[in-house]
Length: 460
Figure: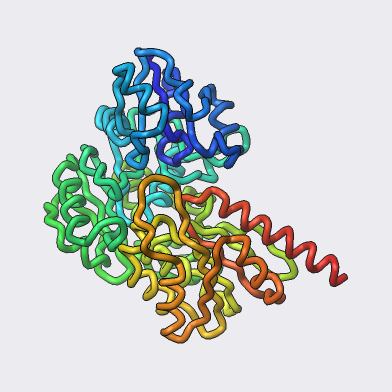
């Protein structure tokens, strides 16, 4: 039994891996600045309930030379835990390196792509568990079908030799994985340029032993060199092995047909049909029959903060969504457009570097998918800590969108949005909150619901 200490254990990938290690009998502890600030208490309560000991991020959790300290790529060297570990000569390992170490020893399924990989990972895991295959699943988002103490979790600790992971390209760690099966959902500009991304995904392809499953409709994926005998594709436009015909798209669900079978998908949007096709391809290759796949898709509850309806007051729906890059924003706006209603969009950019890198594409994603009725609020960029050049503001996005003729408004923070938002909301409107990394966005959605109830109570 080994001992591990996670610095920044509240991160989605970190918390999942910490729980997997505990389930395998290891001793695990961790620290996080959000724990110190008493934020996201539900996550930290969940980790504690699984036997993970939490410490302040002041070095007190680094207490033995037998520990292995695990960090994410975003952790700064100046954090007291890191300083103390370096002083004691304790090995420090990146989370991605540890995950690769565990993953490469099993029959591995790596789900990658700049968008959709969290949902695909969760859906494959759910289908396999329902079919009695019981894999381990390490995901970047909380899966509503996998609960611990009644809360959705980003991990399923299975008993089989199969392991499904969300393989991240944003920090380049994707090249460490040597999967039996790899999935590539999409390639679009996000944390890196298209050229850099194609190179990373090509390495994943080259290191995959058995099968590569790709989205045939993504033009950048088509530039990859893949042996046709080791490749299966899915599509809505091409003659792929898994080609879907959308039959109905609703605000929170859809129906599509593939290979003569009808599938009821309890998730909205064309993008989720693509996600379902990817999961079908993996599941079929692993020998799961079509009825089990149909049942798994129909009973999949999705991922937290992926077009999640937080509540509804007087016909006003408040939706919480993880969309933060241009591709995800476009998918979310298109999915919500099936309801012909006025939308109040609230988008909180995350990180000064990513916002600067994607500025033009972010502006285009809103301009191409908003209507003249929509109102967009953009609070100031979310700062998660670390060194950053603050030479861009959310107001730069607002001005770019306003000059194209749309109603975009700058706010210094989320709370400032409420002063303008609440008086304008009317019955039938939709409030769509988008953004990543900030755990308080869901709380913000709940606050909107609370204030709407108070507003209508006063109106009688």
